[in-house]
Length: 272
Image (cartoon, rainbow, N blue to C red; front, side, top):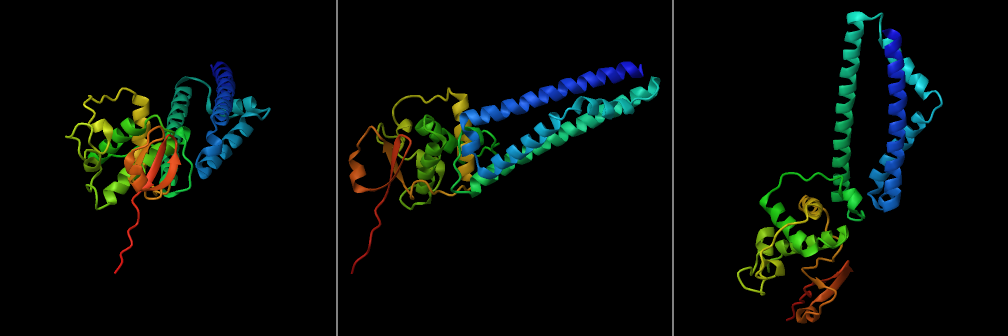
């Protein structure tokens, strides 16, 4: 029995090693193809690269298969109950390692989110944003996520962040309601006369693109958690690039991001 089990675990070690190497190479190729490595938060990208290089180096050693056999075979005894007990212990060790790997993955997600929140200069793309797990879904989060979905789901991530900045800048302004839901619903009872058109166009709004909603939900969570608003220069207004509203000439243009142009209210200087 010992010889059969040793041969079995030897083959299992080789297969798992080759599979892990393929997965590592595929992950790196995917990240290089979509540009995530270049645009991810730098600290997170370096961490992933270091871990993949270390794992690839281990798997590419010529004696990896022999090493697998050397680690597994000595755990087996002369057969019978002793071997069963040792195999059960090995299974417990594997479960513990899987739990550790899952915990590490959650820690990396939190670290990525913390960096995205704290670093105003970090360029965030879809691959980086996908690592964020939103916290509790409050009413303010639900309103902001819905607003971003209907106002900016077709924008790049940074464009969605820019629209979120406008909404939150209004919350901070004395000119507007002091909650996210209040800002987005201002004037919603007047047909085609509200602040955000999706709320007063007379149409029933339905969230049909789940993937897009999940993404804007992550953006909403990052912004409510306190990501610095540095993209739009304290803008409180925006419009699509293909329109020219009359009110735009009365405001100060601050930025163009994606398909939106952003504005702030002029600073009023008091005179005697």
